[in-house]
Length: 245
Length: 236
Image: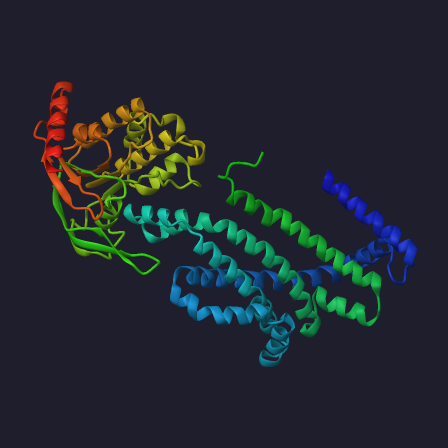
């Protein structure tokens, strides 16, 4: 209920601001809705949203799986941590734009280059979070698993993974928001479709209603995915914890 | 089956770079069906010795001989249950082969039936310790290691659990190693008492108790206790 109220408030402020500054700079909600409906009925909206979502999914899955594996390794093995740390610091501080531009130069204006560039941007944060999670693993439970001769996979699944789940969820949460932001830049710079491409076109034409139409639908999709996928996963992973009063 | 422990020394290097001797030479053996009890002052190195015997600590001088196929059941000082798995899952994960009937029997003996689906965070310490015992027995151990399993429990509950341990130990041939501070626990459960010195630990007295566990009456126990007190006074 409170969430709904919060949404209503957002649209009210928007509408008021639109009346105040005029439709050229900030179109009113109905004007933007008109564009959304027009784009949706022509099918263009879904095409671009679909292209963006596909890139997000691929890059996110790639970065999460590779990043988690490297982070776990660096948390467990001191040598890996020593070797990997300088690379990690470099990657963490490398601007997204540099990675994207270099990827396009080296691999051409291809889908693979775009997805790899997005994934590389997300990779270091996944590594850092999972490394922290692995370092925080309870050694006494590892010892218990070893004394009871639990096979590796069973120990990983029932002893290690539940301890990492909050870190994976946190990394997924922050990573998803990072990927949402970067995917549009990658599309703007070198893809012929996707929300980022459309926003680029709208920018060149100074077409604010179109720009808002695409960004807001995109934001709505992100919100839905957060509520439907990420939050239930977090709730499930922490269900054994006593609830806060 | 037989467990042979022959530790010639164990040192520990502190963060300040000083070397501390944790264990002096220690040697003993344990047969199937026998309960060995380690008794010693706090901080004498008992837990270190257990970690070495369990294979968790390999940096020591000497050797440990235990059959590689020996299944180990362990009750740690703290219960060390998985907080994100239910009581039943905790036991089954350690002992995947256990039959439903056996599990029910164990839960009945340890009075855990009502708590099968509870998470460890919802249990009292006494209950969590009983789950840890259930887990150790569920694997059908060849070597059972109990590290102060009855510490910080009230006398009545400790007494009941002690009887339950005796029952379970009697039900199958198992080498049992019990660490305790309590002479009462030691003389009620043990076949052989190993008294340890303060750190670095060495065995100061090895006392066998020849009367079978079931035949130890209160009078007998009192006599053994008095004998032990005299013996320990002598060695001091």
